[in-house]
Amino acid sequence: MTNEIRYDLGCYYTNEHEWAKPSGDVVIIGISDYAQSQLHEIVYVELPKKDANISQGEAIGAVESVKAVSDFYSPVTGTVVEINEALMDGPEKINSDPYGDGWIAKVKPSNWDANVSKLMDAEKYKQHVATLKH
Amino acid sequence: MDLRKTHIYRYHVEHGNVVDFGGFAMPVWYEGIIPEHKSVREACGIFDTSHMGRVFAEGPEIEKFLDYVDSNDVGALTDGKGVYGVMCKPDGGIVDDLIVYRRSPESFLVVYNAGNRAKDFAWLQKNTKGFNVKLSDMSDKIGMIAVQGPKATEVLAKISATDPNTIERFHIAPLKVSGFDCLAARTGYTGEDGFEVFILDDPVAEPTKSLKIWYDLVAAGAKPCGLGSRDSLRLEAGLWLYGNDIDETTNPVEAGLKWVVKMKKPYFNGKKAIEGIIEKGITRTLLGIMMTERGIPRHGYEVYDGDKKIGVVTSGGVAPILDASIALAYLPPEYKEPGKEVQVKIRSNMVKGKIVKHHPFYDDSKYGWKRVKA
Image (cartoon, rainbow over all chains, first blue to last red):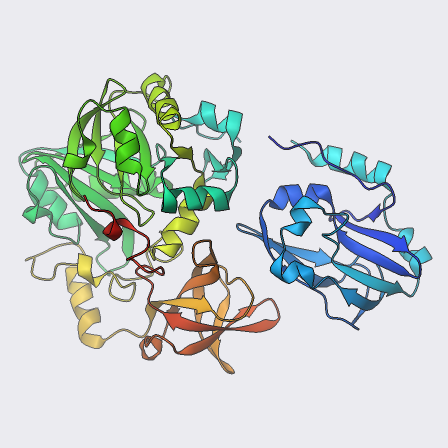
């Protein structure tokens, strides 16, 4: 049924399928292709609050499909500097482009080195996903 | 755990996203909930409902028996007519909702929820004491496919020997479909016009007839639909889901089902308790909410009026046709006026909504069976 799962090699991933990608002095965050394919038909995104101070592992929003709600846990500690407002009217962007147009927020990290040590690179994350597929 | 398989299982595993639904391997969707939902509102969709409970109820006292266990007026049925009702416990709590069809004076078909198959059959059996009747659980012996939508009649006609349009709403009649003997009832769980087709003499272990009909319906233009859209369609139509909106702790009066409880009948299970409930007055009633701010209300979320918690959402979700989020919730009766503002607690946010009419939530001149001329 499902198409091949896509991985962004420049991203670092959590067990709960969020990704974080350093870009200049911010880290962009979102959910993985595997996560969006599991949710299917995303109809609503509760975005984190701009300027909020957030911690790695904290529930800062939610992604909802027709059937299910999935909490969004921050993969990074820092301050939210930008949120993807386009998802309010176009949440399906997460389905079509989870690593691109479907990004959720940009965060100014306060301790990225400590954060990244707890994340998986694309290869490790791919192995993690393989253990979940039935 | 081994999941139970329905008649259409082979199609589901090949084409659908199959999950454990009350112990049955059932598809949530094939292409997606939203396109499947829209196909039923706009054209024709089909659902495998072979997991539902189906009982042949027969005998000289069968009408008397069914009138005793069912809240609605089974005795008023004529041959070929059906009626929606509930079975109540002596305290008025709802055992299940069901449809009873009279095939002939001593032969009825009873249809109830998949999740309650064992419970309902045991409940019916237990209540037969003193009645000269015979109940046969046919759930694994006959297939069942729902054909729903404004084009349901047209699609079903393509593979039927006679015109299904001669069957009126809430009636049942024999129909040859794909050459096989079936019963077709003009009902459904989507709010739309359509049929529930019972494929006779087709054991689930070798369901060749049901599968053939399913494939013929697909070829005739019907879109296969999963349980996801079945749920979103029934919610949009304001139809009750057993286990969410009604159960053994809710009574028909507060659930908005008083219209299926016939108090004029001399006796039926739960009558006395329901009389008491009507006399005392209800403290909560099932109401429809439409969100006016962004957010999706879901089963179990709390409903507030300012600081005061006033109830709980029993069913909620997106309404694809309305492009809005809607919910059913038990609230104090003073909230029943449409337009009244309430808030639903969605995670940590209080999100505004308003009370709306919910039978159905949509405009029934634009959607639903009433716009389709039989």
